[in-house]
Image 1 (cartoon, rainbow, N blue to C red):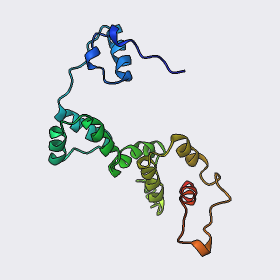
Image 2: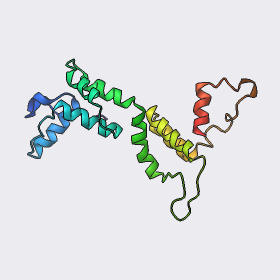
Image 3: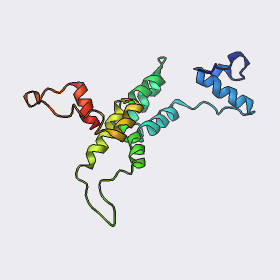
Image 4: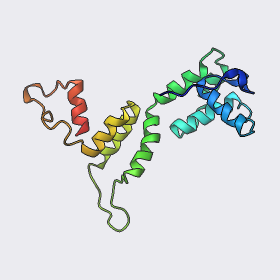
Length: 173
C-alpha cells in the first residue's frame, strides 16, 4: 500500500515542495527540528548532476546551455539527457562489476589474461544504458545460460536476421 504524502499545509517549507517526495523529506526534517539546506545555484546543480550520473564534469558549453535554459523543466531535461549518455552505464555499471569482482586479468600473482571478459563488462554497461529491469538483469546474472535453453542457436538460413527477442535471449546467454 502506498503511503499518503504529508499535508502540504502543515509543512514549514511548503513553498519549496516540487513533488510528493519533497513532502516526506520536509516532514522528516521538520519532525527532527532541522532546517533544509539552501537551494543550490544552477551552476552547482549541473556539475553535481554530471558527476553523480556520469562521473565526468560538464563541458563549458553544457554548463552555459543549462544556465541559459529558462524554460520550465530544464532540470528534468538535463537529467534525461544524462541518463541517455553511454557514460551513464559506464559509471553505474562499474558498481555492479566491482561487486561481481570483474577483472580483465587474474591480478599481480596470477596475471592471466581473460580474453573474453570484456563481453561481460560490455553486457553490464549495455544493460544499465538500456534500463533493463532489475529482475531480468539479476535472472541473467544467476542463470543466463539456462533461461532460454531452447532458443540459443541461430537458424543458418537467417543468420543475418536476428529478431529483438532472439537478441535478448543471446544477450542473456
